[in-house]
Length: 184
Image: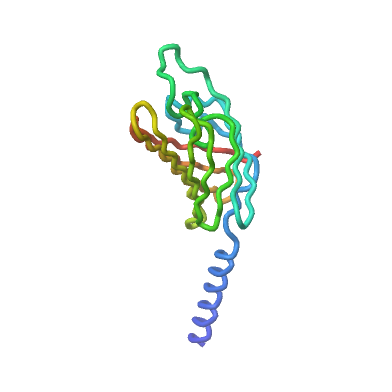
C-alpha cells in the first residue's frame, strides 16, 4: 500500500512539474506604472509610463510610452533619460522592442547622438521571470562607451502586478530602480 501511494505521489509531482514547464509565464497585456510603489532614480524623471506587451512562443514585444518631467535648468544634457537620442528601451521615451525568446541576440541600429548606433537585445526566461538585456556601444568625443541595461520581470501570483527590477551600467556608474506596474 505504501509503495502504491509513493508511486502515485511521484507520478502526480512529475505531472505537475511537466505542466508547469509546458506553460511559460505570459506577460501580455497593458501595464500602467504605479509611481508611488516604484523606486525610481532622480535622473529618470518619470511622470507616467505604459507598457504594452505582446508575447508569443517566439518573441516578447514591448511598446513603451513614457511621459517625463522637464529636467532642472542646471541639469547636464545627455545620458539615460536626458534626451539627445538615448531613449529606445534605455529609460528614454517611446519605443517598441522585440526580444527573441529562443535565446538569440538581435541587433537593431538606432539613431544616436553621433550617428547610427547598434543596440543588442537579448531575452531569457528563468523560473517564470523574463530577463531582458540591451547593450549599446558607441564612439564619441570621450572615446568608446558601453551602456548596458538588465531588466528582470516578474509577475505576482494573481498576474495583476508586474515588477521590473532594472540595473543600468553607464560610464557615469551603475544604478538600479524598481518599477511596479498594474495590469489595465
